[in-house]
Length: 259
Image 1 (tube, one colour):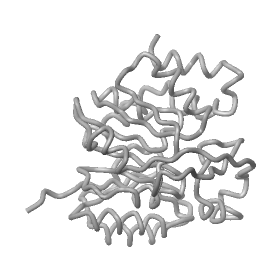
Image 2 (image 1 turned 135 degrees about the horizontal axis):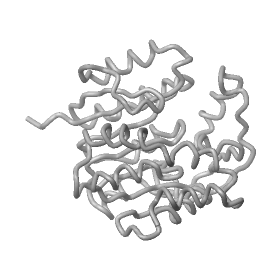
Image 3 (image 1 turned 180 degrees about the horizontal axis):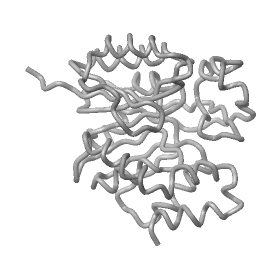
Image 4 (image 1 turned 180 degrees about the vertical axis):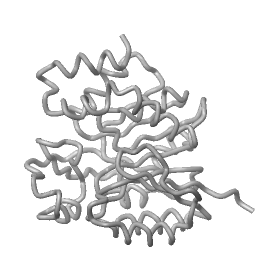
């Protein structure tokens, strides 16, 4: 059975009702899959190692695997992790770690949005920023759970240095990067217009690791917006200038060769 077929089966299973919307959105659109593959092919080659931090229901795992990469996926939500295990059940090149990725290996409190698990977060600041923000008023974090934690440095020590790291953890991106002391070839992190300060800290941490250039994709466009790559400071300035309605996107950073 293919991954899409397994995802389709989960969509009909009442046990997965809480993430049905995510499964519907992220699985079954071949055009979106092709665009995703074209985007990530700029960073991922066959045989590469990729870390997917905040894997949710695993659609990016699928893209990385189609590109021939081995994937270490980190996802703390039990139902999402269960879906990933079901969808990639026979794939030995997908390693799932059910945890939060953060600054240390101390357990972390996760704030669960039962109605919209895609915005479940470990960041109290994210929850506070969303409170009464335009476009976010309907979001409610109605449960808490303590979960294990890992760090990027710990993952690198165990699995090796990845060619690419994708980070999408709802306002916790800067904390994830605080657990990294290695220079990476490329990475991406999500940003939102309700927490532009998080994007600034992420860019500061990325720049501190060495010379990098940046680009961005808005929402789920799967397309780099800028015709040329820019410095972290230019990217920070551009994010600060975005209208609130831009909502969210991903910054892509690639390291410049050491001189």
